[in-house]
Image (cartoon, rainbow, N blue to C red; front, top):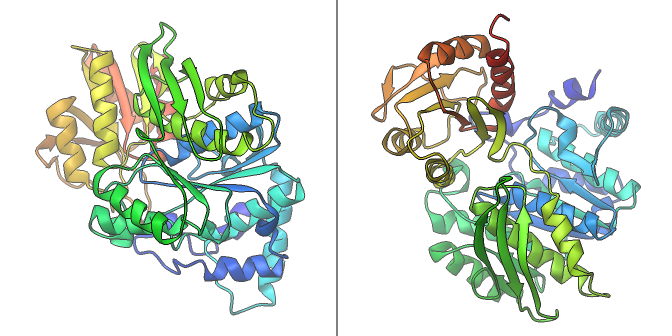
Length: 435
């Protein structure tokens, strides 16, 4: 049985309409069977509504640039499951994934009471892989929330909470305050927390940090950036500075990241702050390490340009806050452009609000790609939330629709990571229309 088929026999909350067994109990029992490899890892734990994946990639890149053997565990993946578990630039191999998965299922055969989820199993595989490979650091992104997430069995060196917005409300709560409490569940006693939260969310994070005697570094107070615009090559420039207890002050002017989306400046700053805390405990690394780390970070699928004629972008913005940032940036970058939006959503998203944003701020040319799945939003009508939207069944159908429109300056694929493969295939078909 292949790794994928084995894992697919487990409860997969990423593809369920209703979450099941959302608890760290099963992963804790699994880890006990395999000797608790997570306890030997030096981790950074990252939670947040938006930006946690990008922050994880930036931090991983900085630590790797510093010469540290660094593991990275992120979700979801764009094209292959192996993307989720990597060391340095290398994804986990198929052979290693098969071996670790096989050992997991061998252990489950004799323990009928254990019911790990799909994400529990993959988290165990990541922790065992990082332990076996003797990584110096492991950057761990939560899957959902924080308090009850499978990854919340670790005791990190630093915790990061990027932001809090309204998302996954059926599981995490119906208000910013409730969701922030779930995210703050990753805060451990005495362990420094780095955050870019604002408003009500920040109040919750501050209260949790105080209750657990965890030092708190806040963007805009303890560390900050100053925007310097973008380069002709499409890289965002900014100044960074931090003055935090336990580490020497650090000021780095005119850094560059390979992203133009403004929020990526914040994500990079969270990673820089955490890296400074980790790396400055010994001999502080030269400034060039931080520059190289953020400057070479590869963050696939985040406002990624897939083509130039027309310009095609992919960004997995799946809640109103994230989508509004993408739309505003797109309009600034391409004023007056004719823009078509191509969408796919999960059923638990605020579809009406996101469609309203697209209609009012971006375009009236909207296509919805049907991708079968239990958790997927089903578009059944021609109009929802005031935004006309045409359903298409495949990349070929979408390419034909886009070609028939005539002149299009920009196409934005957004709403879900699951749309990435469709976006790449559509670009290929637009370049080779006869296929």
